[in-house]
Length: 306
Length: 180
Image 1 (cartoon, each protein chain N blue to C red):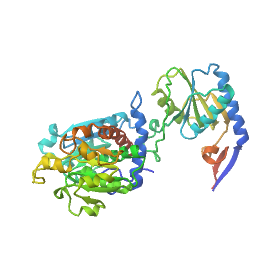
Image 2: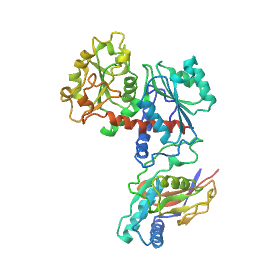
Image 3: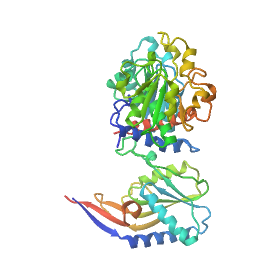
Image 4: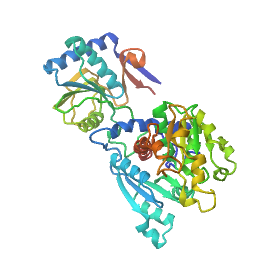
């Protein structure tokens, strides 16, 4: 079994089997990250390019580590100091990278669909590291990987996603992915944060966090994207925090073995209180560790695909 | 059409493993620093059998590990059809140990080349010895096993399958020939 496409653009059109293949493969790459010599020669001679048009710490670093642990040649392109500032278009940048025989290009872009456009016009594999409000597939894969490590399954789990679903590519990828693996998803948010026709994604909607928490196996908090709040989505951050923020008191309503997750970076005191973020139920740091294994799996499966 | 011919049955397979266990102990008098590593998948099953026999003889368990060589193959960059990685589980230190590397069949030698590279990423063993159930010839690299269950000359069109009861329901070695 191998991945059907040369690219990883999103989870919406990926099959359950493909998602499971990535998660299974990631399990085995954890062993490599635990060795003294954290490196295998598998992608020797492959050129892998990080092309990030938006800020990122964990995703970019995580891809870079993953590529290096597989012995690929990793190049980071800082868009702010590249020819893009001289007006080069995405497709021209793509042609340049193709002329340099890049094998895999990992792209983050503020426009939904940019990775798909790039992939249609180039021969290399494209990995979407987050595009606009569309998808962030490797984040969802590492989230599912972290959950299945803890709970040994995804099927039948009740997952509550809280926050700005409307702007969130992380939420979209997680909803597509977790639905395929059989999770039941409830999204909790103020109405302004819900995309139109959200029920069509096959999720339940609630405006009451306390009620939804009680049954949850996983509470997934999204970051309030302060850079995207100019449109009057919220009366105030404080009000959001009071109604939808997760603090210790609220967490005590949930099951004792509930998992608390957040894709990072966190706004302490907004969507999550510091004592919950640093508390025993929080998986935030494990999510980061899982990220490297999952991205190794994706690079491996795409890099060795025939 | 494929035609299967049995080369070795369950009883002889068992005696062969027994003989190889004795040979390993004959060559390695001091078992204190001896460890066994089987190559996934069938090499690991074979390694489990060998280690059982050794335990029957010397009354102690030797450390046993599993090694997957997929990530060390020399044909990954040209693309491989089944890139399924399996588990590597070497929970002991191989530094300064004598490693008995175990696989069920040796053919071109490329798997063993990959396994040697993989092993050395785990430490610097005192030495590595190679045990295989079947040597079918056609080596492409200068690699020679130290312990061989049976030499089976083959043509390139033939396949050798070593079956273990745990995996396949019975113990045997067969040759598969495709007939036009």
